[in-house]
Image 1 (cartoon, rainbow, N blue to C red):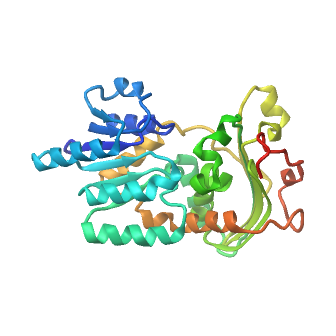
Image 2 (cartoon, rainbow, N blue to C red; image 1 turned 135 degrees about the horizontal axis):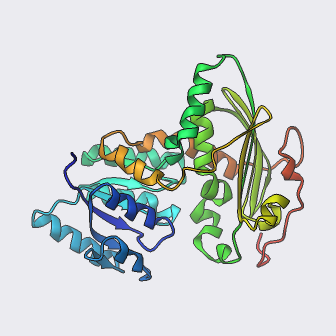
Length: 325
C-alpha cells in the first residue's frame, strides 16, 4: 500500500482541474493547497474542502514555503494552468522541492523541454506529463497489434476530431495562438502523441489548411501515412453528429476500417496518477516527439488543397467571429 502523498494544485479553477482533484482523491492522497487567480472553485468542496486556497501566487508560495519549513512535505504540484504557463509553473514546483504533474502540453516549444530537464537535474526532482491516451485499453491493444504486425507494412490513417466551441473560445486564452499553441496544440496534442507512439516518428509533415478554427494536413510516420482534420467549428460536424445533438466527433480510420475508442476516457487521469505514484509515469522527455510535431504544424506555411489531403479540408473556411485573422 502506498503512503499518502500531499498535493498542491496550480490552476484549480480551470476546465481540467476536476479530473486532477478526482485523481488525487481516488488514489488516496490529499490536497493541502491550491491556487487560481479566479475564485470560482466550489468544485473543491466535493473533494478537498479543507485545502487552503489562494488567488494570489505570492500568498500561495508563502503558504507552501511555510508548510515546508514547518516540516510538512508537499510531494507533488499538479499544474492545470493555461498552456503558456505550464513551463513556468513546472519550474516553480520543481524549485519548491516537489515532483510535478503537468497537463498537456507540458510546453509549447521543444527547447523548453531541455530547459526543464536542466531544472529537474539541478533540483533532483521529477516532472511528469499526462499522456492518458497511452493508457486507453483499446489504444494499448492497437499498439500491440501494430508492433506485432508486418515490420514493413505502412498503414493508411485518417484522423478526424471536431469538438465544437462557442465564441467565448476566442476571447479566452485558448483563442490566442501564442498562449494555447493554436488548434493543433490545444485540442490535438494527445492524438498526435498517440499516433507517433503507435506508428513511429514523423518523417514528413505537410499542412494544407490552418486557421483560427481548424487545421488539416498530412503526416508520414515510420509505419503510417496520416491525413488529419481537427476543428472547433460546429459547422464542420458531420450530419450524423448534428442530428444526434452531439458537439464532439472523433474517428480514426485505419486502412479503411474504423478504429473504435469512444469509450473509456473518464478514468484515464486517475490511471495516470496511479502510474506516476508507482514510479511508472510519463516523464516530460517522452512528450518531446509530439511537442516537436505540433510546433512544426503551428509554424508551417499551409500549401492549400494539394497532394493527399483530408476530405474535410475542402470545407469552406469560416470568418473569425470578431473579424480577426
